[in-house]
Length: 188
Image (tube, rainbow, N blue to C red):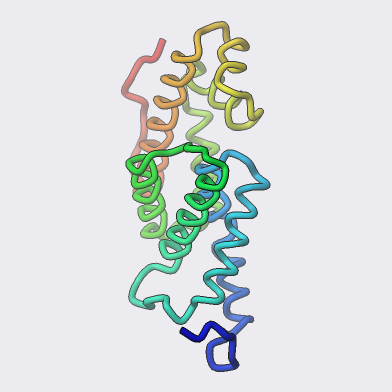
């Protein structure tokens, strides 16, 4: 297979630049879900864009461009894990993440709307879920550090984070679909 770049297989760089700007923020959010490190997430997205640029002729225009890019990022993430011999998310978690992003793709909401919904949904979380979520994701503390801060064991922190993510997913999906959201569970 000839892998040399010729004029006929170089994509329109201006058009591709528009696609990069349009999808960059959401792809960073996706990559951050995978690696929890901003620098590594940026690297994964940048590598994915380079790969997409070089392989744009393989993209099926009948399919979703953001989904294709997330697939590339997912593969870059797996390569990253193999080189570091680390595992963060299993296949079912990756599939669930992709389903959430497909819903996002299907909505007519702008990225700024989605991030606004996320901020609103975080505010709606019960404090028992909101506090560990903020320590873990915003302050980038480990599970054991969060447990120490809120005076509970690490398993409890993991369970609260799982419940917070579930509540956020439900809340954001409600916001996207225009339905009212109210947490149906008492976490106290």
